[in-house]
Image 1 (cartoon, rainbow, N blue to C red):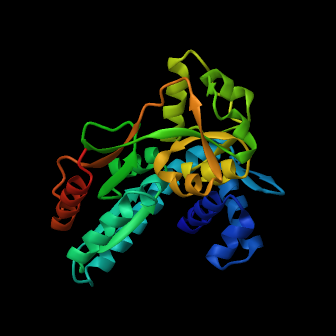
Image 2 (image 1 turned 45 degrees about the vertical axis):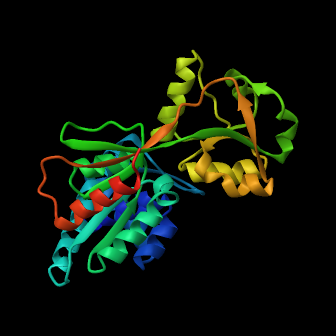
Image 3 (image 1 turned 90 degrees about the vertical axis):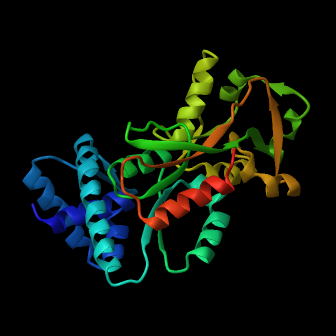
Length: 295
């Protein structure tokens, strides 16, 4: 097994498509396929299930990716650390969710960049759960994500601000306005929800379980920012953070619906390593986030 084979595997896994992975790496598609075949032969395991639409992990492929992805992230971190020795100023690596990068983070980054012009910011986006795991592996300096997530004892977690949520739909469902929908009724309509393994889906599952119900989404998506455009195009009902829907509500492209269940707020949380000697820039960034997002 060579590092090159692992790198090819990693790129195919990220894109879930051999042609796209070949394009990213600027090599031929047959070379990518051959590298994957040789890697599978050496491991004695199939890593991908191939189809006309791309590739999917086998169970062995999923397990292998967990280890390879960590190795690749460490190599990237080493490259950044080496490059930093040639730069003036420090580098901060932030792990953020799509929800935070599209809402609370931009003004914080703008203020921080103005007050710390020599600090280099590297931003990595992933699901909340994966981001916190990356922090535990010491591959990022700070995480800003919505809850709920599980953290290890060495991670400091600070609540920043609450996120209220609403049930929304497109204009096709305006006949539902003026009535209160029961939580159990959501399974009777096309319903859009986050995929399993995300913090948002964990929150939604808990909401249904508290009411002795199971959720049966019609459409499952990887990030919450996709709920609004799908709902706007009348593909179903969805529960989404209010901070995502102001423009569409004003324009009348989506509507809010009443629901009989209380939708508990989620919270943005700031996470960092407790006992790690933090760089000055990291300490300053943490202080700014706390000051900006007082609960």
